[in-house]
Image (cartoon, rainbow, N blue to C red; front, side, top):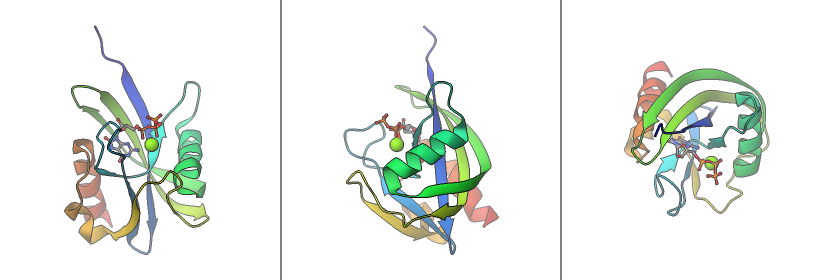
Length: 131
Ligand SMILES: Nc1nc2c([nH]c(=O)n2[C@H]2C[C@H](O)[C@@H](COP(=O)(O)OP(=O)(O)OP(=O)(O)O)O2)c(=O)[nH]1
Ligand SMILES: [Mg+2]
């Protein structure tokens, strides 16, 4: 049977050379690892709309605009994802976890010290080489 690919809108929220990351809950897929906030793109929804909705729900910010950074397709074996990663520098509100998740601002230079899901390796490399 062909596996369904889950499309995910992911936001790299950046301010003053720092990025806002949150920790995935233990019970979630890839639980206990750090992530860039985001979530599933619903049927008929644009990536930008999903990004805006998820970042408001999860981390309290209103995204005004964003730029597509990269797309990563990754097969975790138990789940196949397509991550649409956007850079979010233009937003309103103060970022904080609204779902009880641990969050922090981390400097780009230290991003590699955190444990992320496998698919995020490329994102961290790109951020550290481009910014
Ligand atoms: N948000 C996010 N998801 C990531 C990252 N890296 C990565 O592999 N993923 C994977 C983990 C999950 O399988 C999927 C995102 O699903 P999610 O659990 O955030 O979706 P969601 O917010 O809509 O939440 P839910 O409906 O599952 O409760 O993408 C990342 O940096 N951020
Ligand atoms: Mg999510």
